[in-house]
Length: 501
Ligand code: AHR
Image: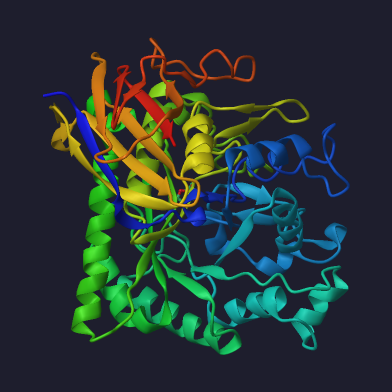
């Protein structure tokens, strides 16, 4: 049968949330140093932040940015990063076997976030620290003045409090690699007590408890259940993290990565609702998908070995994945999955923003360039507006090693009642066949505003510092509208966007 999408503006899942288009800046490799911060760079401003990177962040359409980690945060002392830069300590960063110079800290990050026009989302250290330090960093960040730490912030140059709303209670505490890794019972208790104290300072915070680091963790499901049983009334969101790569199995399974993301989200929502029922709670816990991306750890190892032994470098090149066109199609598909779960996914952060598994790359002192994955993200962030619509999808299927039989086509739509604009995002996961697509808009009468497709005959093509423009999203000239039916051809391994009004 012809692959078909049936779409009606009456079938609303929920609002498009700007926070779906968040990102992540960790003190890891060259994300901060020579990434967003490079005082010697020709475009650097008076604070040492690269102007070219800020411009690309705006073009990418980033909403929130999670900071300062990641695994890094589980050994971090936030107070090392405040006050006169020349007096800040250099510390071992166990997570990435690096030296942290603390040149950039909380105040610098807030300055950068304001320049980039993004909402900061802070993570606190619940690996090696606890309730007290969480109270301290919150006082420094959000209290107007009149106390030691809020006055210290003012003395450090920030008169106004930063009013950060979203706080992550630790990072990946389910992972044995995490400094201060905990059992779900240990973490759940610590998260609950930390949340209670933070809410005594500021009741309306939006707090994120740590969920699972991937759906393949042995504790997936039971971790969420135990942690939420301890924390239910004290937190708002539970986190989810997922990274996908071709190297895990085969291209067919990789192209269907969104099937795992769908399963992850549905399972965490079901688990949260089970805790809700058992505890007779009324509110719902939603999901902060605050780390997601394509990350090929095998591919990276072949580029750059991680530091070991006595070598503790400052800002080494780490996790600098170079992305293919197929990777970009998967990223576009993961955004489709996040959008279609907008009823339960209230925030998400692509990991990460610059140089480290990132859409934006920089040459130290040199140019900034766009990876393939930049394009579907930027277009989805710009054009997903209004409400997310439920899409009825008919598609031929194919067999995958990891997920069994899955549809070749995947799609989501958004509808903006104010402007009347309807946008469809679609992927063709087939490795060899173009798909003829029909979009049935029922009673609607639309005109085609724009149809773009991102694909290449060579889906292994990667952008580089020398060439990030050979493969760009281009007009899909096969797209036509006839009454309430749009038809188009989706090339093999492709991501597309159709804008109608
Ligand atoms: O984003 C890279 C790392 O992946 C993060 O530090 C950690 O939270 C996750 O394991």
